[in-house]
Length: 400
Image (cartoon, one colour):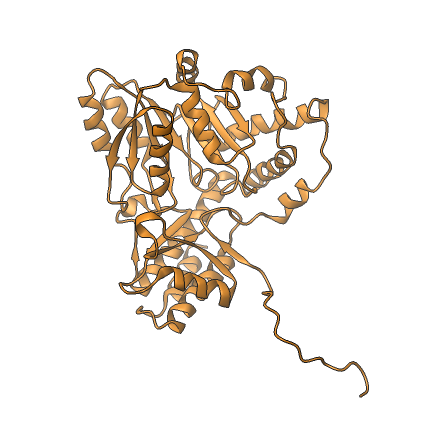
């Protein structure tokens, strides 16, 4: 036979084309950030490193919208949560926490592990914590036994966003001195967060969502009130010690080996956010979130979040119809269309799927994901109305 003979082989299971990673985190890592990280390590005690880290500390302030000090830890966001607790509280302290989603519940478990007493406020996981309930409970705490209020800004398990400025106003109206902790892990860089203007005392953040980095870096922003509390707090701390960090950070260094490659990536991420500008970044996320919700509503499926004012612009959680296994739907979408979606967690396991639309995402990527979901609904004969992807496309056209 002339030329090359075509060989008949078993079809490769390796998917071709772009993998649509539309989880609620980790998110897509842009090539610019990957390339920025692909360079040799440098002396973490040298001048070049100090210049890198000092610039990062300064530019991070614009993302958190603060003039307060920022600490960077080589850890997941959970580490920054542990740092917030260990530096400000003492054994037996009461902490107001919320059973309003899997990650809110996660903090309840951490509070217990530290020997603190959780004051648990519950929701049905379809709403964020209510400011009026917080005010009422704090007003009843006349002895000021509650030392901190711990709120997740964006609950990725449910697709709900807490009204942080209103919660701050509720705390002020109650005239309560509790510290205000806010977990911004899945909101920072995707939706507005104003540490100073909103009266937050400790912010907790991670690298792998709106900041577009791999997992492995976390952040605390600390108010003067929190710094004062750390001086008398008696929980043990070493790795997470703000004072140890502070003693080195002022010169651009860290008390132990920092995540040098992650800092290279963070430098690039900050540059990318500055180039787009935060207002445009937030607008992009809002458009994509609204388009996603338009698709879900057109399909006739139910959002987990019941309150439009609390809809998340970084993740949408969707209930499947009764009798449908959400995980089977996700598996079909992954294997057929190479699209990765988040699953339901805890009480929503098998009942929901979650669409991430945060970080390095654009209109075409979201349309590809929504089209894949709609095709899967048809393929699996899951009850729905047609036209969800078209409704999303129309919203994006009208808001371009």
